Image 1 (cartoon, rainbow, N blue to C red):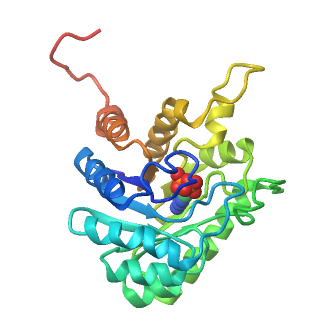
Image 2: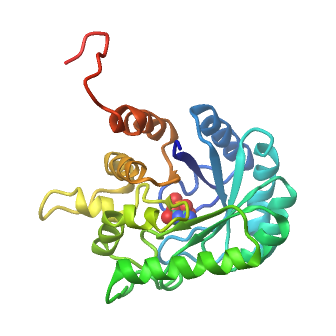
Length: 272
Ligand code: HH2
């Protein structure tokens, strides 16, 4: 099945890439509509950054940020709510959200009760401290086992639509992220649909920098983001979570059926 493109929409002042751009309700709605027009299958709306070191946002402020945006876009495109707070998840569902992006691990019971989808994401630590000293003896084995456990728990609660996510950058070094990406087809083979969110994350800036140079900043991480999204789609990911919908949809056109089924096909037009 064609992988879905989930567009990121952060209604925050401090998200690591789009922070401050869509803090006003009108700007956020406009951005959501634009991403839907660009081909986003789902828009993931968040009102609290989870970047390393981010400060928690009070519940009333998070509600104020996200609810009008959810309500306005829900008739146009499928909405996912990216939150750690059960009250925000409930309010977003009431406004039309149908997928809970459960980065904090507390929303399974709500997804089951409300019959909405759930993303179970792996993380080590909380945003305030998760990048201080992430450690695993066997990152792939431990993350895959934790996701299997999370999926079993969610299924036993009665969650129907479920995705598992290795949580790229959530308590992981660049080496951990790469190991998880390299093992993605094994996670896919485990049977639950997989979501991958690597868009513009800092390991891409580290890996793409020339030797000895400073890491590339978030604005300069689109090529790496597209490379990882394409890799994830070819490995069988069900959803890629990205800031750059138009470019990713184009990458999907190539990474999907065209490349997977590449054989002795005649392509018309001037090629080189
Ligand atoms: N990454 C971020 C936020 N939510 N959810 C899932 N399921 N998977 C991810 O990899 C993921 C996520 C971080 O990215 P972003 O929302 O752009 O940044 P911030 O947390 O600073 O708002």
